[in-house]
Image (cartoon, rainbow, N blue to C red; front, side, top):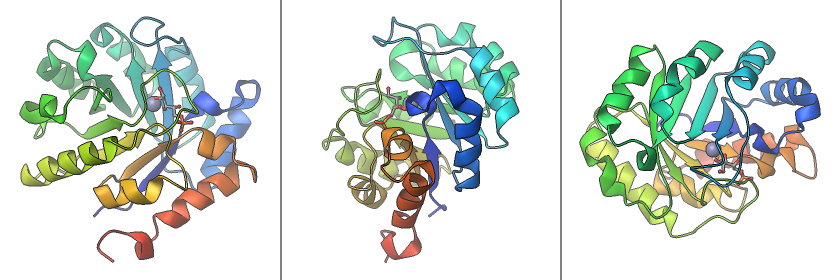
Length: 227
Ligand code: DX5
Ligand code: ZN
């Protein structure tokens, strides 16, 4: 198993001091920075675009894990790659030509991720397991931070873990939504190896550093499934 990744989602950060929050995340041992892009169409919320991704790139050395919750993502891939995205994740629900979209992302020199809404079955990934660099399982309905984890998604994570292994894939299996000290252990056990966390990091009572440490501690070898 890979060393698990903690990816704070800046959706829950204080945007008046984004640079400082990113620096704190980096110092606290975060592995990636998760950036949620929403267009007000695919999801009922609107957030940020390439301009803010480019600002994040200047503020941190951590890889930028960019989650595109937008319609017609193919038209924006180049702009996000140019802005400094290291990973670009698209929703299956927005990509009628998913195979081509994955190739388009990789041709830009960026790792390609694919994600599924809670109601979208894992079978939608069947033909692209050997192609993708990352699979993201949404464990809430996308659009907002601070929502409750949907426990039924554990089974989907386990099913996708099995399929990735059967296909000999080295792709990351990431989870996003309601990840906390309470939910992380069961997600780890189900086979997830990258954990997006918004509120559990930025709204932790002890602050960002304590939030990241708490999640990291739960991924230490003693907690890993094989032990
Ligand atoms: C939800 C976003 C998530 C969100 C997670 O649409 O994709 O990345 O920020 O926030 P928490 O961890 O608070 O559920
Ligand atoms: Zn996200």
